[in-house]
Amino acid sequence: MISVSDISKSFGKKGEIKALSHINMEVREGELFGLLGPDGAGKTTLFRIVTTLMLPDSGLVTVGGYNAVKDFKILRSKLGYMPGRFSLYQDLTVAENLTFYASIFNTTIEANYHLIRDIYVQLEPFKARRAGALSGGMKQKLALCCALIHKPEVLVLDEPTTGVDAVSRKEFWQMLRRLKDEGITILVSTPYMDEASMCDRLALIQQGLILDQGTPDGLVSGFPDRLLSLATPDIYRAKAIVEKIDGVDDAYIFGESLHIKTAALNEKAIAAALAAHGVAAGEVRSILPSIEDVFLAKMHDVS
Amino acid sequence: MKDRILDTDMSIEAHNLTKKFGDFIAVDSISLQVPRGEIFGFLGANGAGKTTAMRMLTGLLRPTSGSAFVAGYNIATDSEQVKRNIGYMSQKFSLYQDLKVWENIEYYGGLYGMSLRQIKEVTDLMMHKLDMDQERNTLVSQLPLGWKQKLSFSIAIMHRPRIVFLDEPTGGVDPITRRQFWNMIYETAREGITIFVTTHYMDEAEYCGRVAIMVDGRIEALGKTSELKTQFGASSMDEVFYMLARGAKRNE
Image (tube, rainbow over the protein chains, first blue to last red):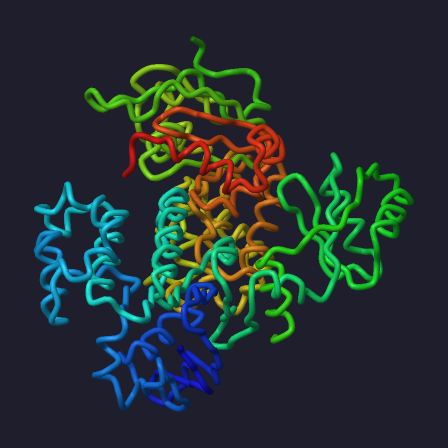
């Protein structure tokens, strides 16, 4: 549905700031696809190119077979875009904003009401309020309604959950699931590693490079090393010892436990090494890496 | 009640701490104890009362009732001493972007009442430790986000406070920077400085020793993350938080 091939984009007088380097990414029809990366990774630049709002230096983007550069006029009616920064009219009311967006797409609120109903009922008590006076969560819901009002085939959302609390975030992802069930293809970016599991597939982006892409489980199973966890009362001492063991790539404290990344060693070897130093370690067990661990491993591969 | 508690192993002791704004009870009788050197996570949805609680604990806001001792000082009667003995860092606001690295350090050192000589010593040590010796004359706005954050944290503890308050310290940073940042936090805790982290991001919560979860002004759960997960039959802190916070009456 969305095909990004070899897209590059630089900024600055001499193009010295490389925002995107040879990006390749494929979003299939009807899927909820996540673009996961920290601030400054290039997420917004890529989304602006996909939504026809910015020209790439090189490469090709197609959405539903249409070229994002040449066919921008056609694409704009097929795309719904919710930018990262709230960009509705602050001094129009909720209802006025929605009517405005419906009319510039030659449609009405009633025509596609079924798409926004679940979200709009929560906004309805405030429909006479000016958008600028809404709370953060309500602004976000209004922006989503406006992006959906023309029944887009593809919905692109730039960091919709940034700065939103955990409960609202969860509800927002549930809303996206329902829209996906309506057949809308969704491309969404987030800096929060723990949201990876909400996506069908995702791409990891850092410094303008795609580090990896796949399903959340696929990315985790591609983790090259073993990750071990151990609980001990003297976690700082255990860390100092473990770091010196040959074959340990990394050791870091994670709340109450010590996490150990190693390609060469198993649970027994770590436990034995700690025992030799007189550190009473509880059980050393193998754990599943998180998307953050996968991201870290890929960052090390690149640098 | 006596003004100074003797038990200095306790960095924060709050008893039935309450703040009302008119009829609105922003913080409703919360009690907690944070021992020295602990990394304590303070979680809550928007509007749960985190900020109000933290403003009381940092001596910026007087409680309506209840009491709290921070670094051994009564927040109601000795707020100036409280402020001298704590550090504060937020990702949203931390350093002056249009001042150089050394200027920021000198400025904050001055605010904390340090002498120029002390500030110079601390600056040398900090620049060496952060591997930023070449960046002393760099404008903070020119530093990468990760460096800013590490610098900002180092400045928040440059006067060796008893406690440092961190307000959503690592939202949006890359995983390598975040790991490095949490390594600094663990080292600092090990040196005996207590860490109080407020956040609504559960992946930050997982790094904490113990956490408290606030809902509608009250502490609804408090304990080690492993204990809370067991208690609520959840596999992650995100689930625990969702179970507690979805029943909230207030939001934003």
